[in-house]
Amino acid sequence: MRPVEWMVGTSVASLLAAIALFGMGFELFLGMIAPLVVAVGTWIAVERAYKANPSGVTAVMMAGFAGKMVFFGSYIVIVLRGLSIRPMPFVVSFTAYFIGLYLVEALYLKRLFQG
Image (cartoon, one colour):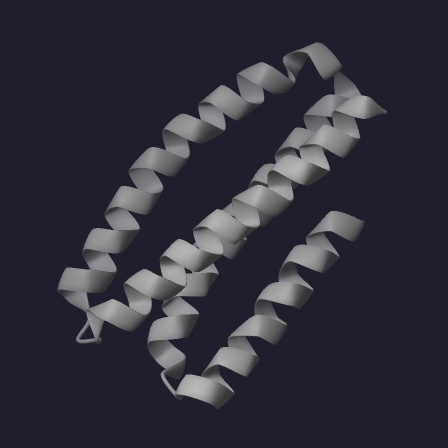
């Protein structure tokens, strides 16, 4: 589970650093938590699928993609319309963690598939 530890550790450390620098903890946390939970869940599902049946990974990833579209769309609407937060710090945090975590996940997937 080394990739999960790295994703969680670097996300929490960068969140704490950003809070210390900018002081907008709740918005930054909300921007981090959804991409982190989904990236960790995706990694665990793909890793298990790869160990059980490497040819079944594509199906797992496609199902995950559909679920992520619905989840992230709903999450963003709920956070921006349902909570009274400053939208800009949330959007910046969400975007940064989303891109960063999916880049890390892509690199770990490359390593997993190379054997």
